[in-house]
Amino acid sequence: MSASLLTPLDYIAAGYWQDFLAGRPIAGGIAYETELHHCKLDGSLASLQRVDILLSQIRRDMIKTGIWDEASLLTDERYRNFMVFLAFYAGRVLAQQWQYAPHWFGDFELRKRYPALPLLTADFYQHMAVVYRDDIEATDKPNATASLFFALEPIGLRLFGHIDRPFQAVQGDQVASGLYQAVNARLPNTIDNHGLPVSTAMESATKQGVETLAAQHSSQSIQTNSDAVNNTSSYNELQTTSEISQTEALLAKANSSTASLTVPLEVPSTETAPVEPLQATLKEVAVKPTIKPAVEGSPTPELFIQLLIELDEIEVPQTAGKTEYEQACKVLDQFEQHIAKQKKPRAQVIFSEKHLAAKQQALAKLQEAADAGNSTAMLRLSMYELLGEGIYADKLAAMESGVEWVKQAASKNDSRAQRLLSKLYYQGFGVPQDMNNGKYWLEQAAENGHIEAASLVSQWQQAQMLISTQKQEQHSLKRYQLLFVVIIVIAILIFIIV
Image 1 (cartoon, rainbow, N blue to C red):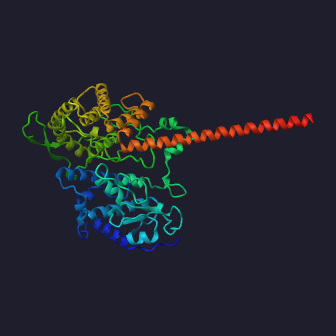
Image 2 (cartoon, one colour):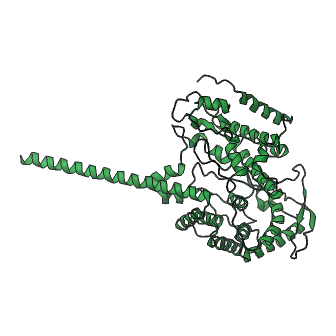
Image 3 (cartoon, rainbow, N blue to C red):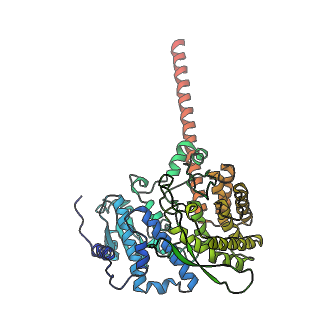
C-alpha cells in the first residue's frame, strides 16, 4: 500500500500533541489541561482508563455545580479543544496497537471517501474520524468503514449520555461508554478477516456451550483489607468486545508531589447543624519490596469501581435516607479520591486515627440510610463490608453483611444491585458460585433497564441459538451418515441375493 498523504487534521493532531508534551498553550486554550497531565498520557491502554476516570469526574463535578450543559459547553472553544485533543490521543493509541500511523479525516474527506455514511452535519461528534489500520484506500470494499473510528462519540457519551440523552453511532453500532471500551473493541485480536468485531464469548459458546463458557472464567484474586478473603474470579462472565471492563475510580485532585497529603474531611453530624471541616494528614504505609504486589491501574478492585460508577450514573429514585446518604458521601468520597491516587492496593493505604474516626461516623450515617430503605446506601455500604472496611470487624460477619445488603437492594428491583449480585454468584465472591443464580439476576437486571446486563443477555441468547443450530446440524449429519450406511448395506444384500 502506498503511503497516505497527510490531511489537515493530521497536522492539527500532531500540533496538539507536540504542544501538550512541551507544555505550550494550545490555540484557543484547552480545559482541564492540568488534569490531563495527571492522567500520564503515555500511549498505553491503561492511560485511556485514566482518561475515562477524568471524564466521569468532570461530569459529576459539572452536575453538582450546576454548570453542566452540553449545548453551552460545545460553544466553548476550551471544552471543544479538550474533547478534540482526547479524540486525537485515543486515535493515536489505537493506531499504535495496529502499528500504523493514524490518519484523520474531517467532514469533507469523510463525505468524499465514504458517501454511504449517514453523517449529520450539525453533530459535533461525527465531524472527524481516524483511520487506524492499513485499508485506508480500499473504500470500495463492503466493510471499508470498519477501519474508521469516530473517537468523539465515546467521549460525548461519557460526558453527556446514558440517562441524559441517547447517542447513536454514525456507523450504526452502539456507542461505547468510554475510550477504553471503544479502543479495546477495535484491537487486532478482536477483529475478524472482514474487519468486523469478533465476539469472543460467542465463539467459545459455539464450541463448548454457554454453561461451559460461564464456568471457565479466569480467576483473579482481589486484594481486600489485611487478610480479607481472596476468593474472587475475574470480571469476565460472557465477556465480549462490547463488554470491556470499565476500570474507573474517583480522580484525586491532591498534590501528587508530596509524601503526605493534607485534605479537609467533613464529619457528618448526627444533627442538622452544618458539618465542620477537619484538617488532618493522610499517612501512607511503607511497604517492604518483598511483599509489595505489582499493581496496575486502580488500587480498588474492578468489581467495586464499576459499582461506584453506576451509583453516580444510573439514577434510582429513593424515598428515604437521602440526607444521611449525602452526608456520608461527603466524607467517603474524599477517602476514595485519595485511595484512587495510590499505586498500591487500598488495603495498604493507612489513614490517621482522626480520619478513621470520621470514616466510621460516615459509615454509621450510611447504615442509617440503608436501614431506612435507601438501596443506593445499601450498595455503597455493601462495598465497604465486602472489602473488609465496613462496620463489622469480623471478616466473615462483614462478608455476610455485605452480601445481605446487596440482596436487599436487589429485592427492591434496583438494577445496579441485581447486576452486582449476578457478578457475586458468577465469581463465587461472598456466596457459593452458582451459574444459575448468576444468570437469573443478570436477566433481572436486564429487565429493569440495566444496559450492560441487557447487552450480555442478548449475547447469551445469540450464543445459545448458535449452539442449538450447531447441534441440529450435527444431528442431521449423523442421520445422513446413518442413512448412507443403510443404503450401502441394502445395496450389498441385493448384490449378494441377485
